[in-house]
Length: 169
Ligand SMILES: CC(C)(COP(=O)(O)OP(=O)(O)OC[C@H]1O[C@@H](n2cnc3c(N)ncnc32)[C@H](O)[C@@H]1OP(=O)(O)O)[C@@H](O)C(=O)NCCC(=O)NCCS
Image (cartoon, rainbow, N blue to C red; front, top):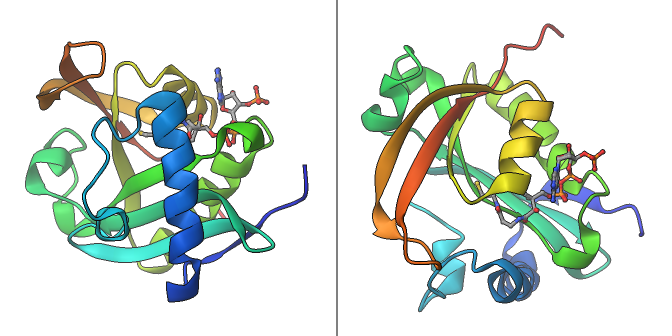
């Protein structure tokens, strides 16, 4: 696979990011329901920064960071104002297992650290690849709670919260 470039998402990257999201939705049901406005979905409320992993004009991956809700902050023991949440992380099926998600997370961790923030995220119980990734790179499980939505296989979502480690530069 070509070595994708991780860069801040620009307006002109949006169509490629939506195409990548469509491939992920088809393969994995992520997101469970295809959004009526996918570009808006890729721009969640409280957005701080977003990155795309680009191979030429094609997007192979995407990650955003947002402000953190007090509910998600609670399990971390840290105030929401000291955290940023990972959102909209995905990699297209042919680009997987080449370290693209890890590179996106490294970029996001560095950007959050530059703002004095630590990363946190929520992952649904069925997201086994994502859970393996977070645990492999040292994120700590800080809580589990039922979600307010139903998974593709008809379960009530079970959301696990993970907190990024503090990395000494
Ligand atoms: C989860 C996801 C982002 C991982 O992307 P990726 O680019 O393939 O991940 P990486 O190549 O950086 O993986 C690094 C490590 O994570 C773990 N990992 C990744 N995918 C895995 C899988 N399918 N099974 C087990 N471990 C996995 C491995 O430890 C891997 O290292 P290795 O390949 O040397 O064994 C991708 O599978 C995806 O987009 N899934 C659908 C959307 C999703 O679940 N998003 C997260 C929502 S919280």
